[in-house]
Each structure stands twice: as structure tokens, then as C-alpha cells.
Length: 273
Image 1: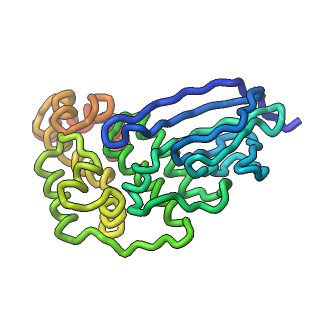
Image 2: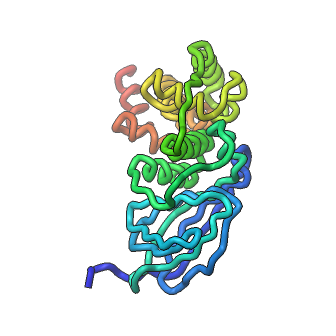
Image 3: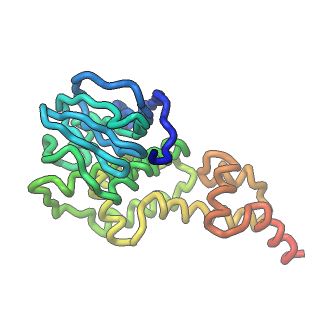
């Protein structure tokens, strides 16, 4: 006995819209079902969340355990199922090749082996799912682009010297400062300055030490502080600062400052009284 409870067969899937239309996210658990040999037209990036997954890919036996990534090229023939009676759980992203190449700037897909243990990429894939749950377009855009880049940088022959210029990065920050409530996406920002999503995201992080989404969130929170201190109702502040709703503002404000917007506003009132 290993102390694990058997999982039940279930699956939930989401399809992206906008610039990532065609991307599919899926979370699933299986104990009894065994997939017959099949193939996807997309790049498949998944992580085993629990249990063990046994499969063949292009006729070669493979085994992936909890924490392992399973990365399959388009049209790679594979089957698969649980390695034992406890089953396995996983999450995966299916990404059309043209969207993959749009991020990497390379034609084709070049990973050598389907099973890869790489915790940084696992964290990025989980961040993609967290962004989907939060319905945060910029966070989803940035997380998915960074996850693709993380896989691609480990591909044979990967090399890129392309960088966004300081002027491009300054322009991006000016755009976000000018309209903090705009539902910015990595794609819209990159297009505005003539860069690619991957290059802009990577260059911004390298230059400023944090991602575009984190920088924008800090900008929104600082503006929210000013308006809350001036007495603007929290619901109005949330809308004016680009948060999804008042609860979204409250979660981010608490995470950033350790107090709720209401507590902060009350402390400002008591100081001003």
C-alpha cells in the first residue's frame, strides 16, 4: 500500500480565445481508461500532477511520474494509461504549431525526448492554468509565452540574440501608464512596438527584473492606493484601475500591502480627520 487514494476518471477542458484562439487546456484524472494510439495536430505540453503515466510514443515505451513533463511534437503517435491501480492526474496545453512558432520565431518543433523533468517549466505551465482561472488576459498571455520559451530554449540548436530596444520597453511602460484600465495583452503591446511576444517578455524581465504582468499589477495597485486615499469607493477604484471586479482588487491589494482596501481607506480617513 502506498497510501494514495485511487483517482476517478474525469476531464475538464477550456479553449482559449483572442490571440491564443486554438489553444486548449485540459485537466484530467484517469484510473481505468487507456487511450488507444492517436495523435494531436498540436504541440502537447503536459505535467503529471500525481500518480504515474505509462505510454508509448512513436513505438517507444515511456514512463512519466508526478512532476514530469510530457512534451509531444505535432502528429506524434502515442497511447497511454495509468501505470497502476491508483491512476494518475495531469494537466496539459495543446498549442497549434503556428502559435508556437509565432512565439519562438522558429519553424517546427525539435524536442528529442517526450519525458522531461524541469521544475521551472512545470511552474510556468501551472501559472498558465492559474491565469486562466483568474481570467487575466495579460497574465495568461505572458505565462503561456514564457512556458513556450522555456521549452524551446532547451531544444537542440536553440539560440536567439534578438532583444527589444530600450526605446521599445520605455514605450510599453508609457502606454500602460497612460491607460491603466486597458485590458492589455502581451500581443497588443508587442504589436504596438514592433516586437514579438517572446522577445518583449524576455527583454522586459531581463531589464527590469520582473514580468510585464507584475509591473502592470504594481502600477494598478499604486494608482488604487491614491484613489482610495482620496475617498473613491473601492468598486469604482477596481473598475478604474483595470481589475476584474472589487474582489480581484481586494485579493491583489491584500497580497501587496497586507491590508484590505477598506482597511487602507479607513486608516487614511483617520489620519486626515
